[in-house]
Image 1 (cartoon, rainbow, N blue to C red):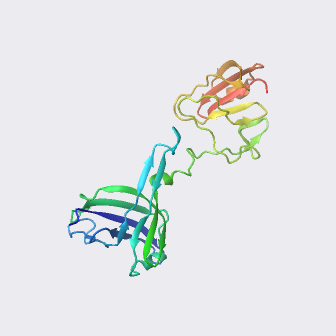
Image 2: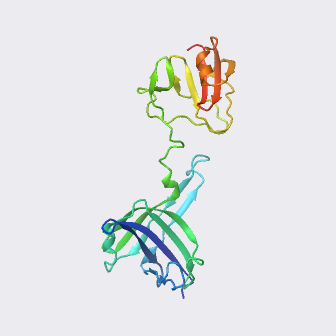
Image 3: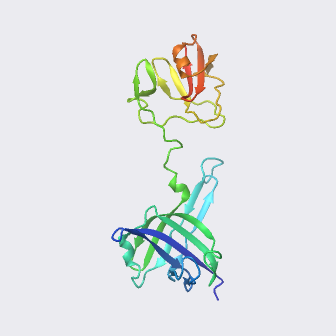
Length: 255
């Protein structure tokens, strides 16, 4: 007797029909929802061989820090009868995939909580098996910038804090959270020796020290805004700074 079963729901795009469709797979003898459940009378075909294998680590192997790591195995279904051959015409990439587990014959969805929610990478349809490559939600943001603001690269010397097309154009602007030590912010104005520490985050940011090749520079004045920072040249060997709606900037008095 089967105590529990796995249910997999994979959404795909049917370009010919111009609509989404849901592929439903089950382990064991399959599953059918009751007329009073949602969705009603839905069928999970008993084709599921592997419901997926997932693991997550705080950081990579042999490490004591860094970004979290996720490992995932594919969802594998039986296609010996060719019943899933039609999946070749469907688009799965980036579409939702949910893996559930619950008692055989249980009420849906209450007794089938989601074990995994992610997206499909692709569907590989073979003669005997269909393999759904999956990605977890972390993959949806892995290639995205923390913030979308880019340098315009349109400085007209000696004015501007957007860099030039040759150095900073279309590169992400810096954003600072927490306390950061010993980092080199981008120079946004070479004529006036201005560096940008961060965009405005809505929280107070203070610049505590500035160094040139390890040698401390003399702390100057905190200016009211970027306009005041541009209008006042710091003393030689010193630095001024400002924090406002335009961001956080540091200006040096000498190269």
